[in-house]
Each structure stands twice: as structure tokens, then as C-alpha cells.
Amino acid sequence: MLRRILVANRGEIALRIIRACRELNIETIAVYSEADRNSLHTRWADKAVCIGPAASRNSYLNAQNILAAAVAHGADAVHPGYGYLSESAIFAEICEAHNLVFVGPTAEQIELLGDKSKAKATMRAAGVPVVPGSEGAIHDESELIAVAEEVGYPVMIKASAGGGGKGMRLARDRGELIKAYHTARSEAAAAFSNDEVYLERFIEAPRHIEVQLFGDNYGNIVHFGERECSLQRRHQKLIEECPSAAVDESMRAAMGRAAVLGATAVNYRNAGTMEFLLDASGEFYFMEMNTRIQVEHPVTEMVYGIDLIKEQIRIASGEALGYDQGDISPMGHAIECRINAEAVRMNSRPSPGLIETLLVPGGYGVRWDSHVYQGYTVPPYYDSMFGKLIAWGTDRDEAIHRMKRALAELTVEGIETSIPFHRAMMDDPAFRGARFSTDFLEEWLAETELSPKE
Image (tube, rainbow, N blue to C red; front, side, top):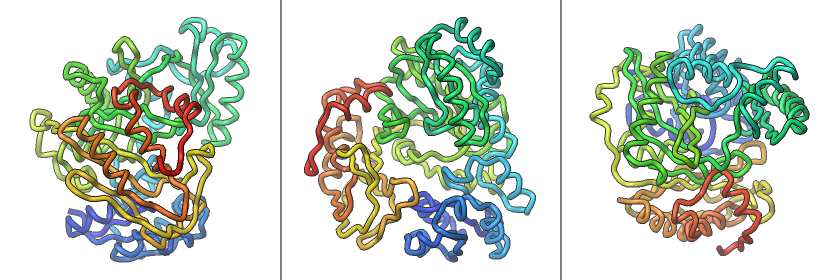
């Protein structure tokens, strides 16, 4: 087992990793920016090291400072969490070069699967269903037009190195195609320093379904079912659940087989998530693979009864999985609400500031993952999510009722939060009936007025 892990992240995921390490009797080193000096992850780690100013590029994205902290304080591994450097092949490679175990997949796997067009080509060759589109990156306008005509409109142009909705443009006909192509390339270059884009058929009103994968160093790969992540605003997830109400046992098995098939094709190791689009006819298509732990991993943990962070650390330590697919079975249903510091009633304007009052819910089947406390100041420099509220039930209906109760208890005063949105959603007939797609939330927010006491 690893002896000392540097946690190369901040906020709730850093604290989540530190908690898992404590239970495994592993020492932890927290890193923090000047703005995060009072975050809980700095208090609960065995050591805490300041790595730079508030701006992420000078701290949490500063690989040199992070590696210096790891080496200077005797770490034997680095856990990147999600975001920041978690999907940086270069960072993973540098860690290994400094004799630091990178808690995640190999640099080669991150590089291959991080390039969306190469990942699609790899999955297509492996026999995984893929959305019809270009074989790789689009190189010029003539190729763009030819592929679009062959695939059929509408089409989506996406950044090869993209994520988070950046570098994505929809074209419903040839008249919109060229402009969308150049706009997507410009956005991709600005966001990812890579202007390559690819094209695929646009699936109307799909559901976003993802499969949790795990592989060890010995070729064993399993999946832990699927999560539904269709409730998104500007391609950012707000509510996730496990399992999906749109997936039956037959489809779950087919999705799981496809995900394991794709992961096996690259000899994948550690935690990964294969994301699919599910269309109205019940066909599913590979979209991308995230080579890290996901924000929404707690819903899988609650349903499958396994600590995914500990599994990451065990595998990084060289242990085998110790179980096969037949040993894995779900129980019940779990829902996660991302609690953000933002004014949902005012176009989700960020709302950093002092948390004057914080009352956290409890009780059977309720989990609160967060790094904040009463008297904590949410800084303006980072993502607005400051907590995740998770509720488990024996079925989806009970999970919704339990989440509704937990949201009623959750009290945050001093800043605007997304809590009113989540409370309203738990009563929404379409949500309760699982009648939604990735288009649903944008339309819902445009038509619904939320009150602070919703």
C-alpha cells in the first residue's frame, strides 16, 4: 500500500481523498492556493503546502510547484482528483519520471482517450457503437462539407481536445456549417491550445448516460453500472442519479459490455467513465471517456456499496481488483444535487462570499460532501460548486422523497445558492416521471421562476 499521497486538488474532492487515505492509514499532503488557506482540506491533511497565488494557473495548474511539494515532503504518489491536472498526460508522465505513482491511468491512455477524435476511432475499431461522423479531425472546409453531407444534418462540430461545452457548435444546414466550423476552432484554440475539431451527427434530445469502469494492472476490467447525467445547464451537470430510469436490465448489460470492450481495447487501468448518448429509439453511442474519477461518483458508491477512491488507491498500489463482474450488483437508487454558489434566479450569476449560517442535513441514506463550514468564505476564483448532497433510497421514488427532505433541511445563508432550483426540481412532474433529456433543463429554467424559499 502507498505510504504518503499528495492530493493535487482543492475543495470537496481533496477532502474526499484525504478521508479515504485516513481510513487506509495513508499520510496525506494537501496543497493550497493563498485563497484556500482556510479550506477544510488544508486542516485535515497531515501536511499542507502553499503552492501559489489564488489564480489556478499559478497554483492548482502549476505542475512544477506541485511536484516540488511532493518531492520535498516525501510523497510516493499523487492523486489528481478531477479537473485541473487530472487528465494531463504530461503531468502523469512527469510524476512517473520523478518516481511518483500517478493515481490514475497511464499517460499514454490519458493522451489517447483525451483526444476525442482519436478516442472515437479507437472505440469504433473495438466495436463500440459510435455516433456517425468524421473518422478523425477535420482539416479543411471541403472535407467538412463532404462529411456533413454524408452524415446528414443537423451536425455537431466539437473540439478534439474539448470538454465542458467549449469548442462545440451546432449546424442545422450547410448555411450554418462554415461559420460553426471556424467559431468552434477559435474557441478550441483559446480554451485548449489545440484548434482541431471533428464532426458528428447531432442526436436530437438525447439522454446522457455514463458507465463507471475500473481496471487493474493485470488486465481485469469491470463496470459498476450506469449514471444518468442528463440534467445539465450549458453542458454543466446539476443533478445525477444511479441507476438511470431510462435503462433496463438488458440495456444495462449491453452498455456495460460495450464499455468494458472499449476499455479492454486500450488495456485501461484505474477509474474511468465511458459516456454515451442514448437516443429516443433506445440506441446508444459512445461520446467520450473521462480518464479520472467523476464529480458524481458518490451515487455509484451509494448504490454499489464500494468506496471508489479507495479502489483507485488500491489499484495504484499494485493490487488486483479481487472480484469479477459477477460479484458486482446494485441496490437501490441514489441522487446527487450539486450545490453551487450562484443565483439561479439571475441566470446563475456566481455568488461568492461569507457563509453566515450552515445547517447540514443528516439521517439515514443522506450524505454531504463538502469542504465548507459556517464562517467559511467561498472564493471567487474557482468553480462555484461548494457541496454535493446525495440521497439514497430503496427505489427512485424513495430517493426523491429523501432528497426533498434533505434539501428542506439544508440551510445556507449569506450567499445565493442553487438550493431553490433543486427543491423545485424534486417536485417537478417531468423529473419525477423521468421524462427528460439533455435539452430539458435549459427550457425549464427559461420558463420557471424560482423564489428564494422554493
